[in-house]
Length: 173
Image (cartoon, rainbow, N blue to C red; front, top):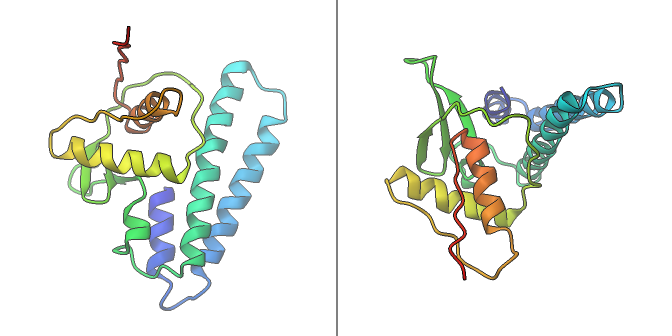
């Protein structure tokens, strides 16, 4: 629904210059509703689910704010295309496709429970773009870098976003 609402707002920019601003307000209202909900009396399971939703929605809010600031007026602009987006395909409404840049991947429907989510940074986005596009062309991905920089956690969080199983092997000494 976020992808659909965002694309509607972007496509409306030519006729309604405040469409992204209105969509941003809607996103902020949704986050405020979730924060009110998380302050209430919830079971641990529900609280974890709502906190994960808030984490994802805050990133979505930041994306809309960036699109508004950059005056994005087309869904074909890279600022929009680089985002991880979910689509229900019209010809096959039972399947969700995940798109990022030129990659299109099937949603995996692997339920891993209400797990926590990472705060998504610009570096996380770049990592995800690389991995999703590698998976799209049937290659693997092997993030490299110093220990403790978030390579494994970023990959695991992308697996959560794609709803695919992720198994981590530690092959170091």
